Length: 337
Image (cartoon, rainbow, N blue to C red):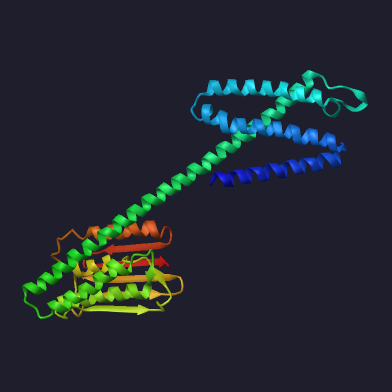
């Protein structure tokens, strides 16, 4: 909070408090206006000064620096000095402060103990406020640092996606070029469209779900070109996707791994991909037959990446079930959009 706003709120608080006590004393204690002003305004000002002496000087200079002995001495000395000072003011306004009913005068000892108690109350309030303010500031700083750390981590995770995807896709196009396939230019064009989306259209925290699903379709089309249109995938979308949004590049890792480590060329066991969407939820289901001789374990980067992004971006709002069985690999993801 800016200093000007702190001064404003502190001033507003004390004006409200003094006005409140002026009203209470004048109406309930049946004091005269002069007596009320002396008791509330003058002594209120003295106690407020004590409050800020502790708040702005003693705590920052001594208590925060763990100079506890000096802080204790400063407090004791201040309470005593303020006690004598208040008594001096009381002598000036003796008729308003020291005179009791029936003309009795309050003795120095009794009055001094009362001032000590009052001073300690204001010192306690200033100390409590200072600790509360510092605690909230530290909490906000910690939250900001944590948010910055998470943002940096998310940026790093997202930066991993493009090279990981590009590496896999270039491997596919390399295979086509090596075979001198006529579909190589079409594959390069598809890759260009996909990279344009990844680099320029998904920089926001969330993107339109329809656009993200189109990106998945483009990737599937690219893989079909790679397989010479002999890749079999049963891809279905159920529900309205036009008004929903999702974190970009969240689902692609599962599909990449299905093509990289699964069997896509058998029409009897196609890659099954089903996405169901309602107003607030998305259910992703994918299943593929595994290669019996697949020993490539390098695909873990993408899965670890997406798991971490889910933890950061959808905490408590997703359920991920991955079943790595003998012949099949199944992924089910339920997500609160």
